[in-house]
Length: 357
Image 1 (spheres, one colour):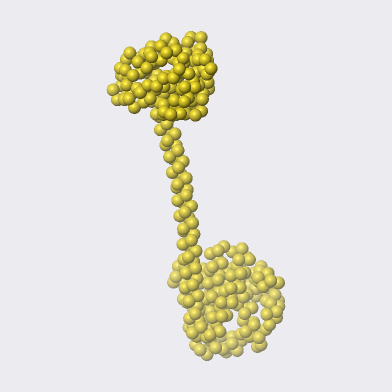
Image 2 (cartoon, helix red, strand yellow):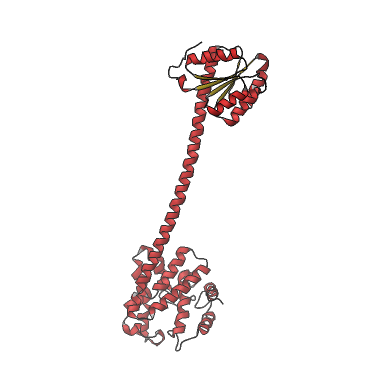
């Protein structure tokens, strides 16, 4: 018999199951383990041991190798499969050592002890098995906790992303609603400007989507369509209410400043920089004959190239750019006849597609 060499080890916290078909072996094991403080259970067969394991959480099982009906190797393999947290030890005679070693190599047992055993050595093996099992179980617990925390974190991230997307969608809708309300100011100066701007915005947005622009770019094009005439608020009634084609040269120069004024109105807002750039350039022509900067080709922002076509299409029908109003079909023909000169060829094709042609 031996007492624990480690005073911090409390054997009473652990349950040990001894399995042997020889009662005197079980008695000897029970006596040694009880004196050490372990809670001891015994079984005279593999079947009894399995029944007991189903009822009691066992920390260590010590099984004889040679038993009738179910030998120690078969029993401990079943224990490994059903109760992997239970540490498995084997008692074996000299002739059974090779079988015990095979069982160790297959992972069925932690260690084996030869009969007759030395109490101190067997007790050391039991305590070592308990320490190893405790570490292994803690490792498994922490690994499972890590997996659970990772899954929980992924779920939280997914939920947060979903909420951010929903919030962004709500903010975008509120933002556009505010812009629409702002565009109503145009109606105070000239009632026909608001419906005109809304038509320009709607068709420009459709073109932007067909052209493959990003969601943010499409929104900028839509807002620029709504506000492309916002600079006209600063024009005099005489200039504002006269068709562009009928304006004297001096008034035509004043009229052209509405692009600069529209840009200046929005440029102080960080979120409106792209919109302001489109508004400034929506009267630029592909061949460089537009205003205010005489930009050419791809120097013109793509959003401005879109709005320029839709603006011309609308103004041709209103008669603002011609002596007489054009039908929609005639307005399309004029746009197509200026493909590559006044209007971007690529965006002209998108325009026709947007109209369903």
